[in-house]
Image (cartoon, rainbow, N blue to C red; front, side, top):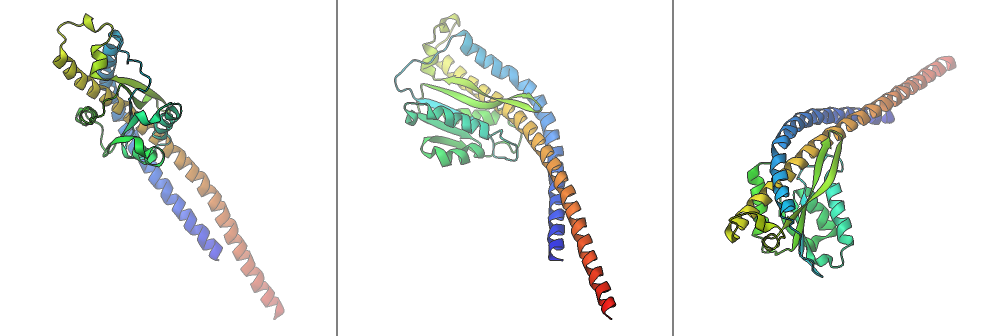
Length: 273
């Protein structure tokens, strides 16, 4: 009987987990539909900001030990597969190839990247942004991250934003967007093709373009996260269903064995009388 009770409790627990994963899948599906709509509106901002750097041929100056900045675009929420881990692992792999990894700082946008790099690269964390991913990202959130980068006091020669680019419901790609300092933009090869550019105009545009790129990366990451969570919860529900079937069979067989054993004892006792 104790074995039968344990199996019954386990079966009830797995059924409750399946209900939770099915509910989370439905919530993620609704959030994913909204995130995909928002992403379509945010993509022109990111493409326009990148087009400026491409047309002006902005290239960081080559130095023996350049200072670099990595911006890891993750969130505070988990249960979304490897959507956050892929960004963190790519940064860690790139740091392993650096001759001077101490010249690289990491800005963690979201608690998931902070938790990862506190275990592996604690001394290289520059700033941490929290409360990311609980609500759909807004341009104001991106502006706060951009302002934190510009006011951090860390003068980097080059940097990059690492984010998950949404491809389809079941696919995303860990991608990078380069970011540059104001001096690098001023020294660009074809910056002169733009008229009426002075230091104030370049600085204002750098602030706006950085916020635009971060906002675009946030939207791409949010859409990838919701689609990945929806897929993960669907797989979890299927796995829970398979486990329920196996536990149900085990429960029925165990109950049948207990009943058979009791019948044998009753029959044996009756025969002895």
